[in-house]
Amino acid sequence: MPDLRDCILLHGPDLVPHRCRRFAWEHDTITAVDLGEPCAQLDSGGLVVIPGLYNGHTHMGDSALPDGATGLTLEEGFFRPNGYKYRELAKLTPDAHLPHLVGHLRYMARTGTIGHLDFREQGAQGARLLRQASEITGVESIILNQFDSPPFTTAELDTNTASLPASAREELAAMLAIADGFSESTMNDLTDPAWREILAATSAAGKLRAIHCLESAGYRDRSLAITGRGDLIRAIEVYDAHLIVHLTVATADEIALLARSGKTAAINPRANASLGLPIPPVAALLRAGANLLLGTDNGMLNAPSLLAELDFTYKLAKSQYGDAVTPDPAAILKMATANIRQLLGGDHYGCLERGLPADFVVLDFNQPHLRASRHVTASVLTRVTPADVLATYRRGRELWREQSWTF
Image (tube, rainbow, N blue to C red):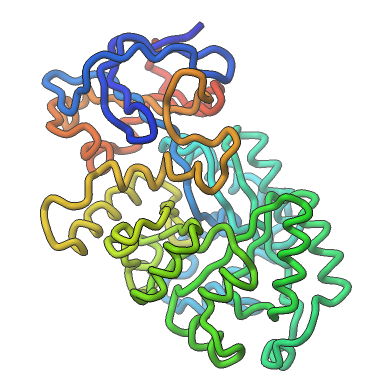
């Protein structure tokens, strides 16, 4: 069976760095974790093994349009039906689109990511295309599918009484036969009766539910105007979403509501910054005890590298806490690793222990900027670059390996 000797391993759900005499796996399972003493710092380099990373929020469909939204507002670039993104995606044939998806999933593996939760546009056809790319690359795509076109008129949304039309019910069934769950852009895109129908359908099928909330104050204001309640409380009480994305303008009361609900949230600091939106309240969410994931959001805005997102988020959180000590770097790294378990369960652990899936990344801490690290976990967040990733494995399958590296 393959193994690594004399490395540093971030062990267990708390990601504690230990010297590891032997780390081995066979087929899809970790078979040996022979730990030595804890080891927070290095004197002369070595290999560092971390859990495979999970990207908590992506839109891989528009990875075919890198930087296409430059100079456009959020509404001009990303809103249906006439936003730039949707107009340009409609022009792509599946054969032209697939190589973009495959290439970006391979880049994710190159940067240590083994899985992602994707808000996939273009209905069942869009889900089917991303599933194909996932099978080609081995990167797990957890697909949260969106209606191809809005099922309601503005007048129907304003009355908030209409149920899903028959065509939308048929489309929903087709999506849930392929995808892992359902998503929409905002709670304001559907009526409350429609959300309840989707809740029933996804519950019956055992599928996930996800939504964008509080990306701007307009989301809340529109929801209040239509229903008398904000978008976050509707996402929790009407739709029972498993995953809530953004929260950039969440108030203290909304953060407390999220934490009490036990829902998982995905934050996307770089994408929000790129659009000139408020930065998510990372420190307040951490203080409240919310289960947080980290996402790179639209491929049109960011290359899907969690390494860049971890660095940005750690420094943002320190600034929001207002001191040089908080948060512990492990709290940020958990957003891309161990926190995934609360949302997905099953074989998704986000940590390394004997008997768990062989989902891991090997980092080269022999490089000059890493070899004398005084805090290994902090260096993972702030100093590791794609060039320092030697290999990425999911379920024991090699997704990426630097060709010059052997073990």
